[in-house]
Length: 75
Image (cartoon, rainbow, N blue to C red; front, side, top):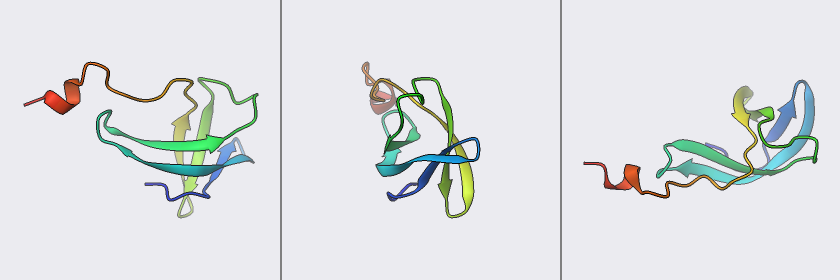
């Protein structure tokens, strides 16, 4: 779970910082919002450093959501 301010890396280079984030319950995964350079386009692999541990992530161009609400309505 990110709190904000965590470094975002591509390889060993810090390219940005997390602005905010949390757990997306409707999609079942953690979500972090960060300002990144344009070269880090959709599909780019990144690492977010949390408490000294690098956690892999992927740059997305669309908001994460569950349009059919399948996860919310699952019984």
